[in-house]
Length: 374
Ligand SMILES: [Zn+2]
Image (cartoon, rainbow, N blue to C red; front, side):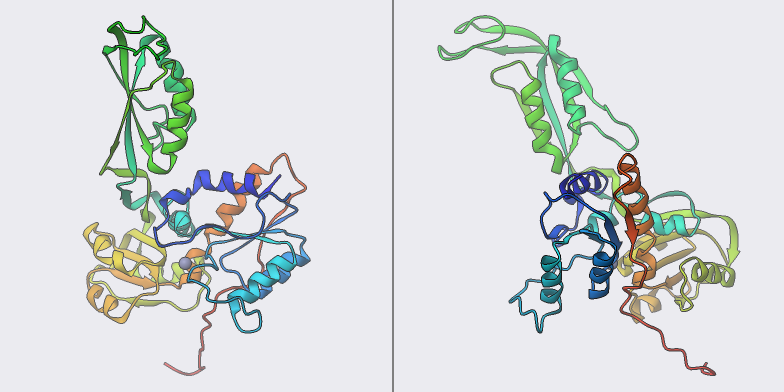
């Protein structure tokens, strides 16, 4: 199996098209055409991760955080940390692929996995993404409607939440008159034709539009296919930011802090107290999501678990919600298990390729606890 096949599979789950527009997701370094030996997963890339890949005979590393994020001015292997990592990857023929905000914004991605880790029930997105869908309307002769619709669905059109093959069909009359150079399927050139047609409407994610249109044109019997493309403002129920759910049993503040700290394996939590004493509804967002605090309060959650919070964010939230900073690394790490299990499903017939998680930590933050200090 090639790197390209693995990447294609991952991007069906976490499409690059949903990533934040300033992000740099996807292939970072290497050759996607190469045959994969083993795969190593890590939140970040560092020298120890590459050393572990070499030791375990992995020639594909998948990280959450991309290394090519800020522009590189040089590739000085002696001074530049990123350049040194690139040198190590190239010298050892290792390909690096990163799924960053596309993994944050997909179902069962970073925030969903954090919610799962905290045993939340009824998990859904905190806020759906919007403005990334297209309404495609195509006019098809009645005789070909099922073939064209099926082709569009196979190419990825007509998915709403857990439903596929979604379409709307309206019958009507299409008219056309072919020029002397035309080759009409129905009727004769130079004669106005009236044909019973169906207007077929489907929703298409904008990053799938080109593939859907090209498949649609191949399946459509007309020489010239009439279709319309409308950008939509709709929320996309399949993709979103953060996650929210409920604990099975209500907890008090201390029990919940204890629970979060043991589930995420961190002894240190920074938090702001809430006036609510009972925790049932919990919002989460893996990584830096301080700007979602107002949204979480609006949705009446009792607690919000995220990371990278600022002093004034705590100050604004105090009294309104139990706001917990559980660490960037700690809140994102659970997604590695989901990547692993998905890849193992893909590789079920191909047991020679192992999917491993980096055993060390790539967290750059360490905690100092002076014994006896308050
Ligand atoms: Zn992150």
